[in-house]
Amino acid sequence: MNESEIKSEIERTVAGTSYPRWTIGVTDDPDRRGTEHESPRFWRQWKADTEAIARSVEKYFLGKGMKGASSSGEHPNYVYVF
Image 1 (cartoon, rainbow, N blue to C red):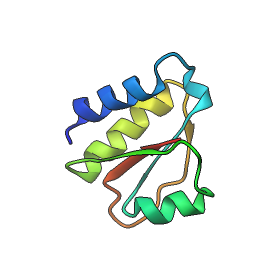
Image 2 (tube, rainbow, N blue to C red):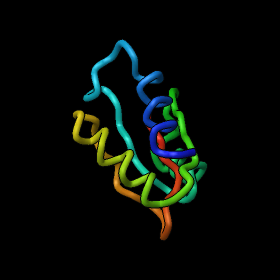
Image 3 (cartoon, one colour):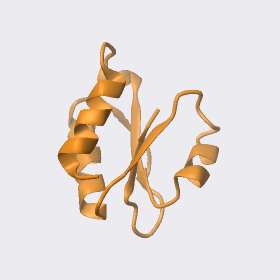
Image 4 (tube, one colour):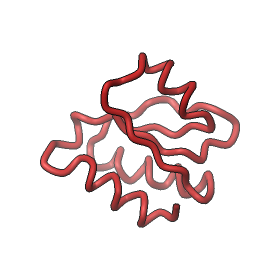
């Protein structure tokens, strides 16, 4: 997915709530990362076309107040929120 598509999906996901209630991160293995986060009840993920897009989306939502999860993997191209 491109940057604007992922941003739109995340905005739709968090609609009606405040950004600080959410955590955002990037990874190259979303299944492993979900387990590391103790399998949150509400988990959404999107595959970015590139690592640069994933990192840009993460930075954008961190700027809006989301909590950050440490990046994982050598080339993280998945963005996730919970």
